[in-house]
Length: 323
Image 1: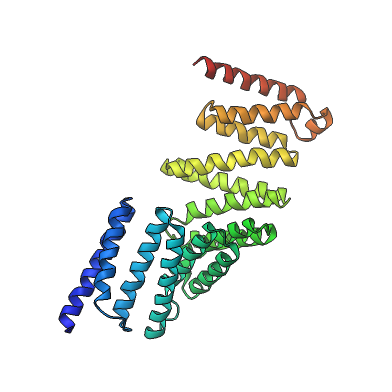
Image 2: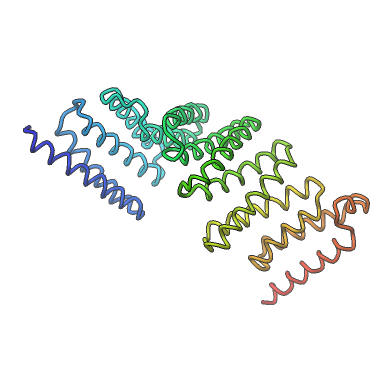
């Protein structure tokens, strides 16, 4: 094949990959799969040499097919495609001498997620570490977001493995890095950092680190609220509500009953008398009524205030039922 024909074929493959990516982003996974299949067929006609351009496109095709497979629930196929993508990326790195490819780290991270979905958590953890090693080769503004995401995923893997102390350590690393990226104005970091804080607070609570759970939980709630006030973004509102509902539990278990009530009413102020929130509130106050007066006073919520708040919630429930 002459060079002109080859270059045209490569350009066709590139266009097909880009079109597939746009289709996938618009949730047309069937269309994306077809374009990627066409790209794969076109690449087969180019042989199996070490041309960096061909390797780049071959890896992109495997990565695209892996993402589509994840999207439609074909996890085994995703595993195979992403494994192939990593093999090609490593070959590409060897040919070009660029051993620290950003896309290689992303491929390892995607494969880690797939392994986790398959229940292969130790293998997922190994792939996650390979992703972090790849991201370490880049400046924070280039790969900082992906590294925070990888550390968050690592924390979740440790939770699956019931290694809560390791999970907390991973989340704390993600928080430290995320905070350092805020001054760099890296896109999407505030939302990701808030989500990491939410996960970290829950894991701290599970690990018995209740004071730290409340501290991180309040930071998450404050950050989410600040973004919600400025942007009114639905995601920020959801994070705020999640963080506050977590604080209800954290504060209750820590004996900070006034803090639990404060978090509960902040949620009610934003969402109104939602059935699930009212039910959680009634559960809280009924549990508090079973405690002795000394414990309630220590939690800054004496019995008469508990009874008044429970009556207020019961009135909300009645109004919601009549409506």
